[in-house]
Length: 608
Image (cartoon, rainbow, N blue to C red; front, top):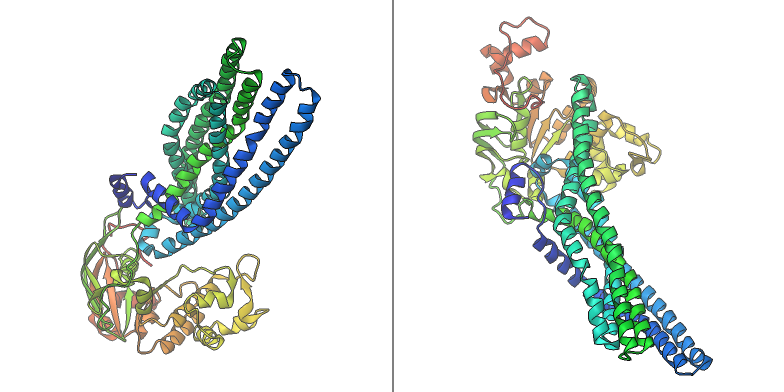
């Protein structure tokens, strides 16, 4: 893949795919990481191939000696040697496979670890633009394909490659003319192989991309099932899924067509060198130029070559598929990575939003020039109608996205430029989206602070009001959650997420409808508990429940991507503007003026 292609992929949000040169470099790097085992595989394969050469040569000797009048004694003398050579080849080949499989498993572990490391280093904005379907397909199907190749195809290709080379050399040693005939006969494979290789990489890359699209559409539809039902988008989502499946089907049929042409042609091509050697050898034997044993041995060598050649060409087909998978896995190395922490450290904890504008890739401008200063230690509430830009502003404050124009800084340093570890200690964003990881309650909490003691875990659970139901679990902190364990409802999962925030101990906490799934009583208790725990820290809360705004130090009102009001609750109510109308409406009073927002050009789903 060229740099221009990589740029186009980045522009449309797709994760990049590594080019052939990058894949070759990665392969060499993996081989060098376990060079001793790779050398052992090569040596054992060579010895096994040498042992395999003995049987046809000995059989040719038997034919010549019997024709010369040696009788049964020649068979009795040479047959045990053939048996010994076969057993030796078997033992060496099995040893080579054992060493090769161990090499493959270790190398696969390195591929998986590198993939996880690169995935965790991706900025959140890159992951969201690309979609989780592509990452999931690369981390499952593609990594599995690479692993199968490293464990099976790689060692088998080495074994059979060495065997073919040694068999061909053996034919030349018997008779150079017969060797040349065999080599010319194998030449018919080249046009077919070249035709296949020129099309296979593109075909398998297209198949992998189509599979990623199917996974992305299915994942998005499943996760947003309630939204799909509420907006009656079932037919549209089914149509999109069918379109993606149709593209995937056509991509699979194309690669199937390539295989259906490649393999039958190869099977026919195997017979050409054997037939050629028999015809030429027969003519030479009739003239007394070669012995019958030599012709028999040469034909047996070439016939014996069919098995390894067949295996090699099958593995070549597998290599094309797994090579495309490896290109997708290795492509993460070309994706934007989070900062490595080498940049300047924030000087203080003040957050400044200066002239910020933001537009989504496939939508209009969501923020149209926002200026805001969040003072250290204050509680700021952001309110406004859906689509006003509240959630977008919270993502910019948390460094998830970078502004299209303007700057969002903490201590004078761009928030989006902080490395993940430093950013996690500085700003944490908690949304109404939540996730319970497979594992125990302790595992779920220690994601935020691996060294946290049980006392710290209980303190965090108590802070968010989750200690009561956790103590009622069968094994307390050691209770397994998720599939195969104790199920959790939405409010419990959200409390676990908030407990992780307490353990992370950030200076600035951004709550984007973080308590939306809790009932009002639990939500207010949780917010008050968090306020007590995070006293002295900065809290920015995006909410529709206006008691959050009432308790805040200041309230920021967003309308149509603009910051229209800023002040304390009392000041804004007294001003009689949009916030006052919203406050009276929330309390069931007839508003003096309707609280409406200008049409927002961004996506309709933006907002809390």
